[in-house]
Length: 260
Image (cartoon, rainbow, N blue to C red; front, side, top):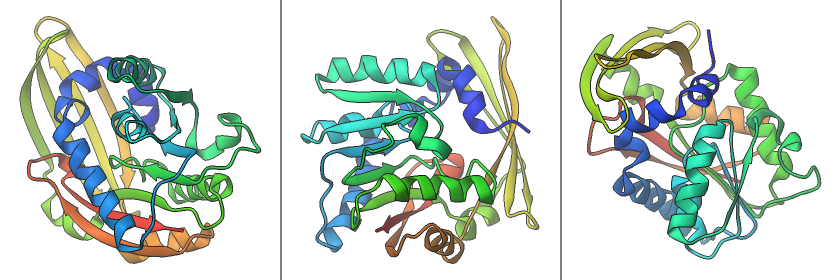
């Protein structure tokens, strides 16, 4: 089964337009950062430069953080998303250093000696590998994060999301580049592996099948994820539940984590 990273690397434009409620939604970005800011404020912690924003996608969070005056380095696997992010950063008038790379091996992406004062991984971007791959991502973040620096991220919450999983859903989305697109999603929960098996297909009368892919999402509850953080050398400082005001699939019910 393909990793989601390979899917959005090859289909960035269609995903950007069909999932506009995520990628083109300033209110969602503002709400996510407000939750992250709240966790930091509770502990009297601030973001600091240089800041590393991982799985940055189209730069939603990177650009907002750079607008606050932070020196931001942002990493994503998708060249297509990074090209969009660079254009959006120029439009916003902020400087972000965007880099293409795999989160499991940040030494290939950033200078091996670079260290960052704070790190974010936002937008439900954790869990798209197996336990070993996810653990490796945390080890890499621990390696590049300055001692005592904050790491803020969110993940789909298994405890609240799995009972609401719909085996099939569909909707119709009007897009500027692909016309009217039928967005279909299939989901099956594998309790033994703790994994949500997914398939998504986008089709339009004008263009036919635009995307048809299977992928999996490893879901964790708070106890499991805090244990995974501990394995990587982190201390889970605090967590908070987040529920979106609109239906966003696995992004609708998330837990935000602050680790050091």
